[in-house]
Length: 157
Image 1 (cartoon, rainbow, N blue to C red):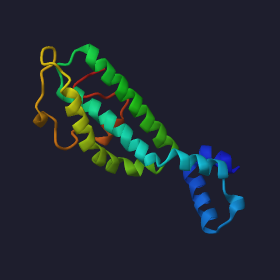
Image 2: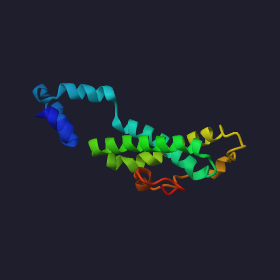
Image 3: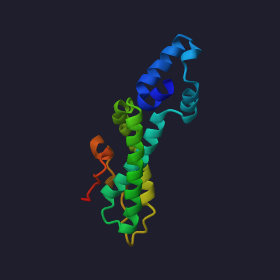
């Protein structure tokens, strides 16, 4: 039953495991899933890492409006992949929803830095080289936009 709860109601499973640990009751611990969780690490770190990449590619679409299709195609793919990862984690770990607004705030400076760094690979012939000031200092996207499967900056798909 405990293993099933881990798959179906992670928050309840986590609460049960916390109680078992506080009561020092090893018989109630779900050893296999606890070990997996410890090996996997904090899902919040994974979310933030995915947000950095997702937001960086959203920023490139937002700022580099003249980028050719061969460049933007990989950005779209990356956006879709990282959105999917975040949405899967959000559905598995209910507490992620509370964490997401702070995670976006925390991830944005790194995402901006990554987008700026990657934009310097543009050669200036096919894509205009952008000044760092063109990348907003605070996130121009709402959380709902960031997670919306059908939303991309400056594009109607």
